[in-house]
Image (cartoon, rainbow, N blue to C red; front, side, top):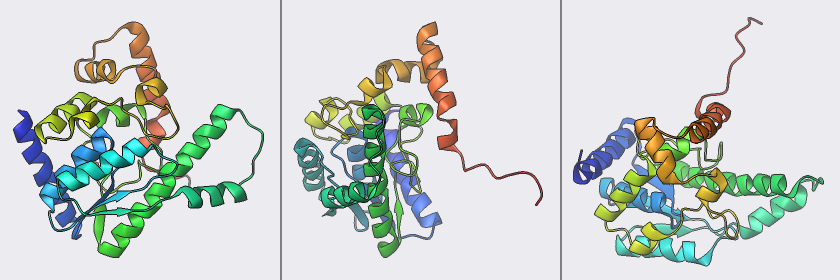
Length: 244
């Protein structure tokens, strides 16, 4: 399938899923990154008059907000900005500050940011009778690189069958600003954080393995281990099978 056909099928799929759910449009978070920019433009094509992009900085990079606003301006996407800094601070004040490994604490706080954003998206979705669109792609979903009940909390995942490289190709076709396409992928959870740095491998390596099944034994072991550890993220919670 060429990229033009892919873009068209994506728009029709989004439209069909939203209407099948009995909803009026789509809401999603605009982070200024590649995936959210591609999805925002695709959702806007599907619902030009009933699509909302929400920009939710939480001690985020100023560049990310600039990029999100640039996409919204270029494609005339309606946006709301909800600054979460003080909400995040208020939660940290009432939560226990147990002494734990700093990396564990940073992860917990980062997941809190993602879950706060999910709350905001569902607030708008409930008010507008919209569907929440998640931005995760196949590469991220396969290894669990998302926050459970955070950015993983969505009604539809339109990019879920596309590896990162395919999303990047689609971004070029949709004329997403080049600086967004070229910048290192990042969830923007802390200063200097990058997706590939956290994953410990490149998207190119991961994409190639997912598409072809080919990789070094070391890479295969690493990816399969990540997949196994993340299995619980991709299913409903288990229900006890015994009779009460």
